[in-house]
Amino acid sequence: MDLITIVLFVIGLVLLIAGAELLVRGASQLAGAAGIPPLIIGLTVVAFGTSAPEFAVSAQSALAGQADIAMGNVVGSNIFNVLFILGVSALIIPLVVQRQLVRLDVPLMIGAAMLLGLLSLDGQVSRVDGLILFALLIGYIAFQVRQGLRDTSSTPDATKTNGQPQGAKQLSINIGLIIVGLAMLVVGSGWLVDGAVAIARTLGLSELIIGLTIIAAGTSLPEVAASIIAALRGERDIAVGNVVGSNLFNILGILGLTAVIAPSGVSVAPAALAFDIPVMIAVMLACLPIFFTEHRIARWEGGLFLTYYIAYTAYLVLAATNHDALPVFSSMMMTFVLPLTVITLVVLGVRAFMQQRPQTTAKV
Image (tube, rainbow, N blue to C red; front, side, top):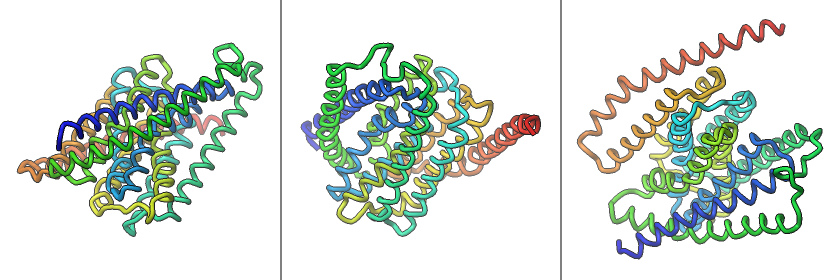
């Protein structure tokens, strides 16, 4: 591995982040001009825009024959989104979770993860599987846009952004931002993938591990920035909606399209099928009782998420390097940490159910 490889890797990552920023800025302003609410923008425009690096990297990897990077990028990004991004955002300021997320979007996110697990049982996400996933994404987008327009149909200024009509000049600027952002994503993804493969081979790590860690965290930096900035600005709907929408887009859109354009679909490594995909599903399932609790993510819950991401990453590193501490670490996780977490989530779920029950009884 030479200096040029490292430089190209870093430049590729910078191009991905900058390109996603331009793409999100242009797309958000266009969506805002259409009168779409902040939650819908977070679930669709911002979420899909910040997931553009994942798509660029996954597609580039699949076309180059590095399917482990494509799968590891998506699965690792989804785990990173929930545990790290929501964890850090909630530590900064407790996040409010709207009822729509709990009743519709989070169950859909969990359902998409389980569907991916089922489609991966044969060791491959085929082109037909990809078409199914992408068709579900189109249906989801259509539903969200329809709901957003229905909610704002009575607003007289729905065609204005920040109180001002969007003229031809501003429209051209926004379209230009989107085009430039996409171009930077394409170039940056190629350099990032090439550099990551070279680094993996030099360090003796598998492409799956690199995809689950370095690339997953790197391509998720736009989500990190978008969610943290949204939380600091009080736009908590965008902060949470961005993560949920990104996870949906990663599975349905990125893997779906990648499987369609790849010559023979996307192969699924046995390690991903046996460990990483189940971890992703478990992480998403954990969202339901936490989100149900007073429809908010408290700071201690954010700390729990962040702790689990550190533990997950530590396990991947220990397993990849076959470290002597791996048996002790695994034993502690299985014997103490995981059972305590399951008990905590069950208690939260029961408490949330009991809180909702009086409201339902009162309505009846």
